[in-house]
Image 1: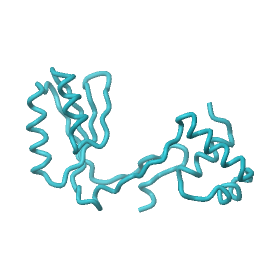
Image 2: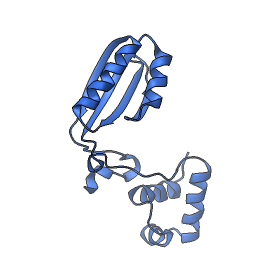
Image 3: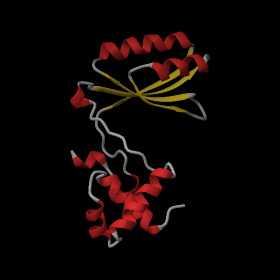
Length: 149
């Protein structure tokens, strides 16, 4: 469980992970050395890691689609999805579907080729959801990358 100071520092880091500890200290009233110690502790505990969030549309990937998939060959499907370059995130699910995959494609042809590959794994059911706009993403604890655009 996180304490109040940890939550406050984490919230500021989620809004802008490149800001200086002195800036966070000024905004929160927490000493900058304490802010530094909290950041290190959060990293050491595996709560926080540094990564880059990409804007796929600016990279030329204009088709963003999420797939809910139910198939016969779960292991084969999982291996295929893990190795596929168009998969941004892959989740194993409980209930009606085996997997939830967030994908990005440069064009519709690439997406249709991907779907044809999926058919090899005995698809029982597939739901496709085309994403037209990010309204809120990464919003937990005060960060919302979509609002910055």
